[in-house]
Length: 371
Image (cartoon, rainbow, N blue to C red; front, side):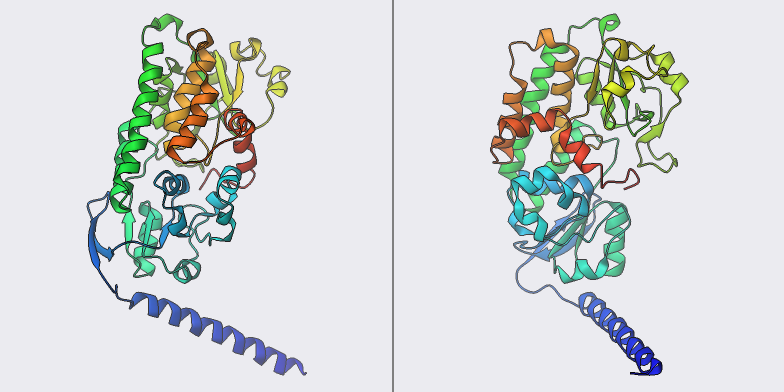
C-alpha cells in the first residue's frame, strides 16, 4: 500500500473516531430519564430529578468511594476513581473493583467518554468534577460539600446525605452511631490530660517530611480529640496555591526544629532513616523513637474520610498515651468497625497493615498530592 493510501486510511479512522465521539456526547446530552422519577436536593442545595431507584452510580470523589461499601451499594457502582481501583484493601475486600471503569484520575481530570459509556443514573462529585459532568453531559450530578476543613459534624452530614440519596438511611445511622461511640471513648480517656502534659504532634508528609496539614483542616480536630497538640495549628493551608492538594502546605526544617514535636507521623520513607539523619536528630520524637507511619485503609488518612474519622483519633491517642489504653484492644475495635460497618471480616494481618500504614505506602505509589 502506498504512503498516500496509508495516510488517507489514518485520516479516515480519525474522522470516524471524531464523529463517534460527537454522536456519543450528543446522545447523552439529549437522553431523557425514563421510568419513575425522584427529586433530589444535593449538599449544595441544588434540586434535580433522577431515576428511582438509582441503579447505576458513578462516584467521582477520591475519598468517597468507601461510602458505597459503608451503605452496602457497591454492586450498584458503574464508575469510580482510579484511586479507588488502586486501593489494595478494596481489591482484597471487593475484587470486582478491577473491572469497573475509572474515568476520574485527579481533580478536574475526567474521561467524559468513559464516564458516558458507563451509563450512570447519577454521578456524585465535588465542585470541580461535578461541574465538568454538568457542563459536558446530561448525567444527573449530586454535588458534595467537600472540604479539607470538614470535621466530624460534616462527616456525619455527608454520610446521612448518601444514605438519603441511595435509600440506605439505616446503614448511614449505623455508621454515625459507631463514630459517636469511638469518639466518646477516646474523649473520655483523654479529657483530663493537663495542657502542659499533652503530646505535641507533627504530621510530616512527603519524602522530605515537611508537608503538613494546617490548623484549619479536619486534622486539627482529630489531633485534639486524641488529647494531643497539633504543632501546625497556627499554619493556614486551606486553598493555598503551593502545587499541593488543598489543606496541605510545606513548612521549613527550621520551623519543625523550633516546634520540637514529641510525636512525628510520616507517610513515606523509613523511620530508621530519620533516626540517623543529622537534620532531625535533635528533635524529641526522633530521640525518643516516636515516629509512626500514618494508618490507612481504603483511602489515605490525610483526607477527611469516614474511615479516618473513626480510626485516626483512636490510633493516635493509643500511641501517645498507651497507659490510658492498655486495657483496650485497638486492633479489635478496628476489626469490629469493618465487620459492623463494611460487613467485611478483616484478618489480623489486614488490621496490622491498616494501623502500620502499609496500605498507604502501597497506594501512594500511584497517588499525586495534587489530586
